[in-house]
Image (cartoon, rainbow, N blue to C red; front, top):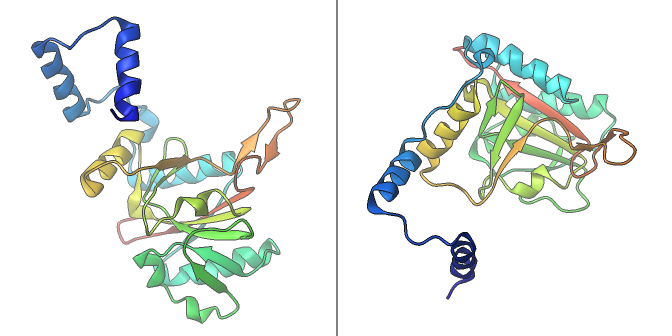
Length: 225
């Protein structure tokens, strides 16, 4: 018997419940399949240009920063400018995502890139965002070979490249993208709102408590926006 079966069996015994009746099971399966909408905040149901403005405002409210660029080709320059402004090292652990690989990093020879998972010694990472949610300024980062999760956690500075067309108003829309495009849930989905922070000790805010101390988003505009 698998560990999962043991745990579920213990829960069933504790709840003193047997198998669901057929009609109840049918209703449950229908609900899981349709993903019914609950109340969606009005602040997220706005034109896309306003969603972008709302997203940026929410990111900055949560101690993150955003740089907007017109095309993907401008991303390396934006990354280099941010590192120089923050006096950060030019060694970067970068996600092996096709869109990142297609960018002209060679135009910035001082940037030294290493593709793959982050290591404990990495100070800066560049990740590729699957989607973002305007209502809270949140990035959606599902785990995948081209998006190593360690890049979101280990480096002190996390830089995330986000295409504006991947920004949606509400969480429900981001989950729709995930289901429709990936087909199945990945092993891990991180929802990141600002840099890591905690006020557990004497209610004094500390950035970088459990992850990156800095979160910088390079937002790539598109024709629609």
